[in-house]
Image (cartoon, rainbow, N blue to C red; front, side, top):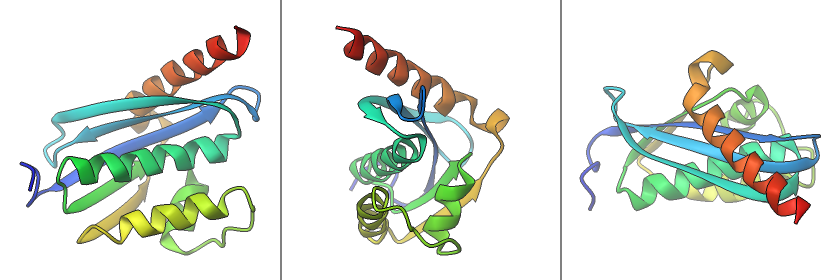
Length: 144
């Protein structure tokens, strides 16, 4: 098991699309419970919607935390829709989001505990920066 086995890891996630749909990407920042950075990742995902990009960020966070050996994960997102859907408060009606939501639930089940928190955009600056970096990369790929 990894070095983060017995502590709660925090993942800040963000996703976005320029044009919605448009060139899309996500960003994830992992921190320990004390707020110290552990890792960052981002990915360009071609043309997608904001909500798909948010879910792709969530999936990357879940996969990344598993790879880092986390047993407990606290996810912070500025997407109220994603947070409420993952908490089971809102139903996932959009067919494009259903398989992403299902995959997220499967990955979340592999942790001892996963919690979700809706945060304001200002609290999510690192993940927002990473998502914008990914959107830049997606936009460059589209213009080739």
